[in-house]
Image (cartoon, rainbow, N blue to C red; front, side, top):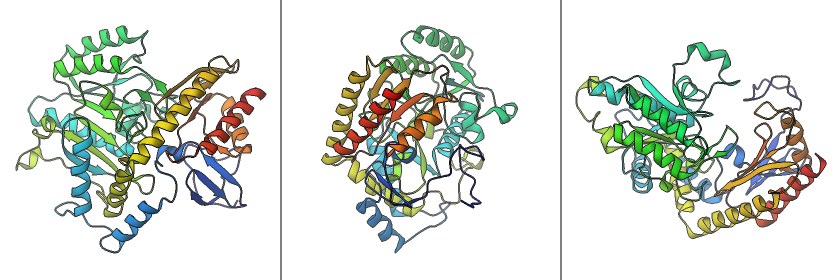
Length: 416
């Protein structure tokens, strides 16, 4: 294909040409030649209710006939006001305000800047962040700084600010993580603790217990350090509850959201902030204002999509779908527990993952491209994270489509 498009997370001379998608419906993508793929990863974790859902399409069309975009500095509109109010009522918290941005990375950038300015506005500046080993928080500079160093960040490492790292809080490393966190908190220089609650996505769907996270959050809360929950991937039902943070106490001071926020229809990010954090900005003084914004902040079309997506998410049918998918994944984990080609099968809510046994693991494992090709040949879109295979589908995926994914997994594993 003669294209001038530069694709993300892809070598320019990739091993295969990009697949042209003509249309989509539910969990199915139809390619140019009429071939159909089951979307087993919700198109990079964004699609909640299935592609081309009519409720979301109608909401966007209706909003487009009234107001498509307006500057959000000094102006407001009903879709944004309603969305912020509805989210503050259901988010763990309680949350006081919502700051809109464009995507997951920018929602994290906003959270980091708010946490740093929170201390600045009180005349007690703090400059250090704490994150978990293996973290991924996005690809803009602040988000990259908070994330683990690796192939994504290597060309830019010298430009990133330093972040303190805690061992990943699996049961065998929790004591070490707690001990290091206590030492860091004793210095009165930590501005915030940022984490992906319960599941680290890009690190390979690494899962850890709510009790481990609760122990870390309790230390931060006792020290008065704000906690930032990056729920970009885990939000909107992926881990069983509406938000992963609802499974943990204490709860965060800031929550970052994107991906499923608009049901997969339009880009949007937001950062929700607790009353405690917001009070440091609640002033008429210019030097206490949060000077940050984006051209499409609180875009009315994206707000309309998010409101329609919330309606679907909170309906009984969606809850039943999430329970059905989670039960299916529990069965898959049991079936793979003794498979000679698979290791560590696991699931958390509507996320299922396992490792393919390979001579070299990790994100750059040479088995990755072979796995993706094998799944595509069987009509399934799965995009392994190195030798980690994961399934994270739209909730409306049918049992038949789940069965097709499972048969593809069985077939691929039998060939290894």
